[in-house]
Amino acid sequence: MTHYARHTIRAVRLAVGAVVVWFAAAPAYAQSFDGAITFRLSAVTPQGVRTEMAEYLTRDGSVRVNLGGARGMSVLTVPAERKLYLLMPSQRRYAELPASASALLDPAAAPPSDVTVTRTGKSETIAGLTCQHVLVARGASSTDVCLTRELGRYVNPLDAMSEGNLPAWQKALAAEGFPLKVTAADGSVPFEVIKVERRSVAKDHFVVPLDYSRTELPRRR
Image (cartoon, rainbow, N blue to C red; front, side, top):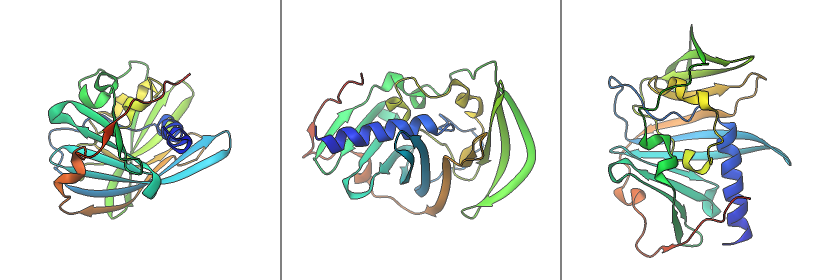
């Protein structure tokens, strides 16, 4: 695996660790959604704040998240098959991620008992959709999450790459909807949806290409 690939994997892990609202499921009343969602990720790294645009594609319950542009990577989840994959298009390679590590495949996991959820009653329009602000607090730290019910089930194919480092309280809102914006306690915005497009997404975006070679991810030390 190239140095760039290793760097991108580390960057993805950092971004995932910083984004505090990758929720595993949404309520039964939520609408289904097929299309594309563009969002901005921001994470603090030793080199400073890293900002990256990502594309979230969904069709019939499968989700693909594209990061890093043409030289980047994609994380693909297929719930019907209980499979998670990391795709590396520039190398025409893929790796299978540990499905057991993904909250996506365990949406019934109980939320932490030491988290307080407060519905503020405030709403906002983001990317043309209305969302409701919810304050999630654990100890002295709190995060404001603006949730919508208009995008159906939200899944996080990146959580399998976090190696257990995601905040436990993120599951507190697992049944609440799709996050459009997250504001941390310090006022920073680690996650924000920029654009939403309802459209048909081709099936071939949600399968591992036949000409990709399987590889193993480097172990994190």
